[in-house]
Image (tube, rainbow, N blue to C red; front, top):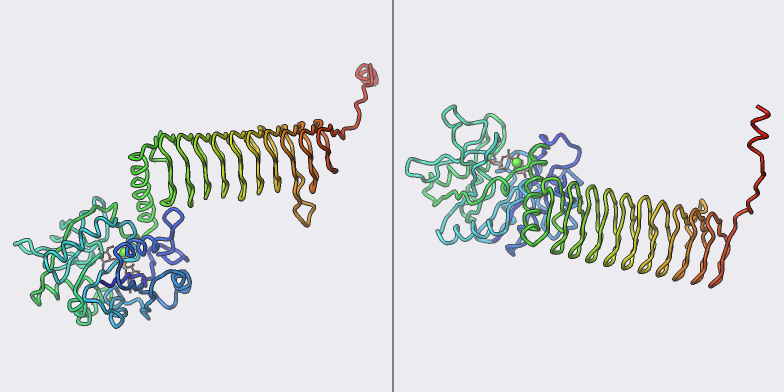
Length: 453
Ligand code: UD1
Ligand code: CA
């Protein structure tokens, strides 16, 4: 079987400078979902019909394992198929719309099976949408057989009650596909409608069926921003449902957003307003508190991520607690049983097992050992205005509160740094470094000052 994905339309209803099929559902462009589903049936070829004037789509798809075919002008879905026709070599063809991303593989397989089993010439995947919409309607004859598809603009008053709708997904024999050459320009729109192939096929005595195999949560076509948001919601509901079935607890599933590539371990509990993005993986028995956003993170078992924490491209090992209000920037590795507390920012740093930075710190380009205590307000001064420098803190070091570590600098193991110090030189093993100015007390000062007033 060959697959043709129609994606050369202008997508004007999106009111966007970005091509419609590159709009994202979570972090993945719409067209990727369609291509991924097509790949799952192992077709001979996947052709994507594109508009040669829309460079971004061409550039994006040239990196994918598909063949690009150009429709020189967007003159309708039939015209799009016509552009692909000369390249098709198999005896059967699956047509998918580039703007219909949520089709499940199980449904597609069932659809293909019905086409094959019933030796059809043309099969239409239909559905019954439950909202006001602009899909073409399936008209059946009194005996129940499909007669034609009527586009919304062509519906007569009586036909407006027709509810079975066209998903834009079809399977046909290559002989039937060739009928696309006979489709005439629609007089109202000046476009060539692929849907007219149904009536042509029926009139030629071909075997045509429409199968309502799924609901709109799989078959939604995205034409507008409202439909994009509906598609995102449908996929969110599907993904959350799957994780609940695998043993993840959600306090409010309808406020959590999980990208398709994320994975979550059993017994993990997810509070409201959580965003899990990219290829984030979360282990077993973790708790993700409200307002957390994790992108491309690896979270091991028994980790707690407290409210309003943001982490990207970070690895958090078993048993650690992060947040509330922590910020883990890319290339951060937090060891086992660590504590990264409120208003702590960590960037491109490694933190050893059992280390704590509980309050108000910036740790950037730092390599920190095990069981280190980073006092409140500690700052690694990693940037001299031109370059970034490293801070090394070895095992069992104690850094007093409000310390500045001016990098490059090294604190050797078992050392102590007194609170309020500015450390510019290496601190030897086991020693105390302190750089505060000694305190001076002037007795009776307050009284004298008041007398002057
Ligand atoms: C189309 C169907 C409609 C169906 C709906 C399902 C037609 C005439 N109508 O309507 O019956 O209910 O899909 O979602 O087919 N495209 C091209 N070249 C063009 C025009 C469109 O490649 O010249 C591509 C688009 O990029 C899109 C797909 O074909 O991916 C469908 O086109 P669109 O304009 O969205 O058709 P609908 O009005 O949604
Ligand atoms: Ca559409």
